[in-house]
Image 1: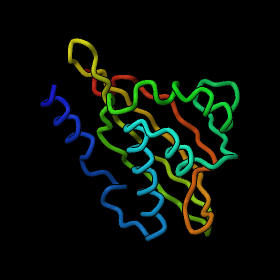
Image 2: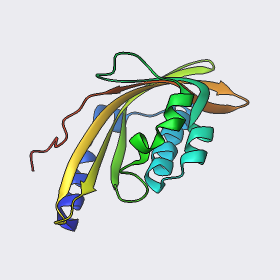
Image 3: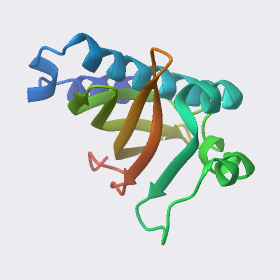
Length: 158
């Protein structure tokens, strides 16, 4: 299992146009927040995740849903998002594809790869693509809208 995770990490972190790109300070701040938010998700720290990552007026739209939902729905149904988190799901990496900053607004598109470990110890790979829309309030970036794209559960076919 460990060898598979190491191999997947290596494949995920192969150079891509975004990885070789030089990011501005604002772009890097957006990337850093995105990575920190996924760390909070993995650790299962729901309250810190909601308060530091998502604006109270967030609009979250998962591919396949008929309409976006807001913060009250997300808080009431947080087990939907944290059900496999809380340390049981290793996040292999967050790979930005593009970051665009427009003054105090930003858009980041990125991919996340993770693996759930099932009872027999074999990983079930999953990946997702996201587009997050952020604003800078009080000198800090916060996500105001999310579109999470469908992705294959097992992107590497193993």
